[in-house]
Amino acid sequence: MSIGSVLKDRRIALNIKQEDIAEQIGLTVQTVSKWERDLTEPKASQVEKLSKILKITEKEICSGTIGAESHIDPITFMKKVASVKVLLDDVTFTSILYDCITEKQDFLGHLEKALKQSHGFSSDELNKISADELYAAKESTKIENMVNQK
Image (tube, rainbow, N blue to C red; front, side):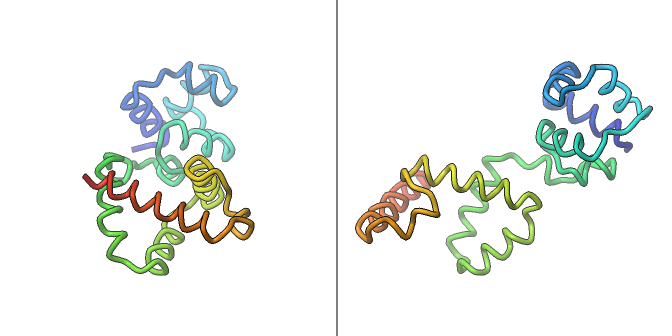
């Protein structure tokens, strides 16, 4: 495959129009069309945006090949990770995450957002909350995990 065919195939698979991509990146439809026809290639800054829009890695775009990981159903992935996570120690699990996550700052930002939504505080505020509040947050999370496993 080529960069253009990866972009086109993935766009079609996600039912996204060239116009949508052009608008989100701030380009013309003609530019997106040229990429898909392999007349030109996107710049590095555009590849990053494309990877988010098309839900594939920057590596997949640049190599012109879509790996099997882009075809994993998100629910299946989450169930598999959740079932294995409880059987691994925290250091091993987070070490694997660190090695496999390419957008570490983005990942940390998503964690912070989820923590704030779930419990109303950020990781920077952990040292400011009481032991009782921390215990309550952990217990709430345990209950949520049990509910989600059913």
